[in-house]
View 1: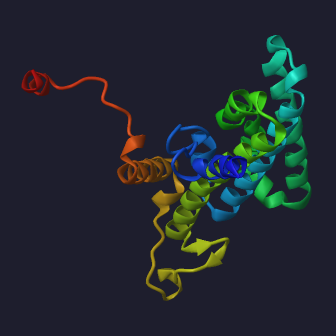
View 2 (view 1 turned 45 degrees about the vertical axis):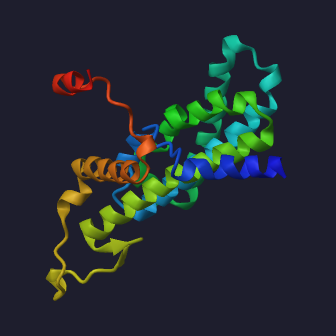
View 3 (view 1 turned 120 degrees about the vertical axis):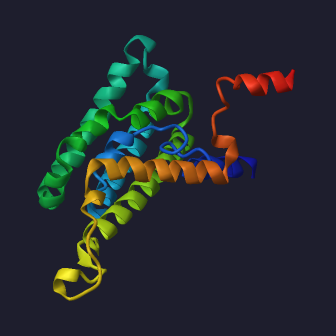
Length: 221
């Protein structure tokens, strides 16, 4: 029973309380770059989650036979091999989305989240906990990407998954697209807003101040 509870905690912790994007600030390059539409955000989310989960399982299986001197090289080779397979599948069956994602699928290989979880968790744990941890972190990452992608596409184009949701003013409706939402600065502001909202709801996630103002120090004394 305790083991089942541990697995459940490992799965659910990265969703909000230990979210890799809002708490650890990992993988934000792709979070900012591929969230101009919900379709690309979902595709990137699924791709990274699959790569992260499979690589964690593989590395966990060979962890006892993995010399420390070459462990990072082996991990990168495993992740890169899986990324190549995912990239080829996207090019074959989702060519338009693959072009929209551009190089960012390939950059999953060097994503801090993938290498971080394989190095910190999968290398030290059996396959099942490693898979659960990787899948949970992938889902936590996906939640942020999907939220950002949905907001940016909705207010930048009035669409979701390419379907017109808000009637455009050009077609007799009331909505005027906010082109800023499709530019890089909007992604920074939105991600910052999400991080602020999460840390406001969960104050324990906020970092302790590195110093206190002089007046506060004198008052404390």
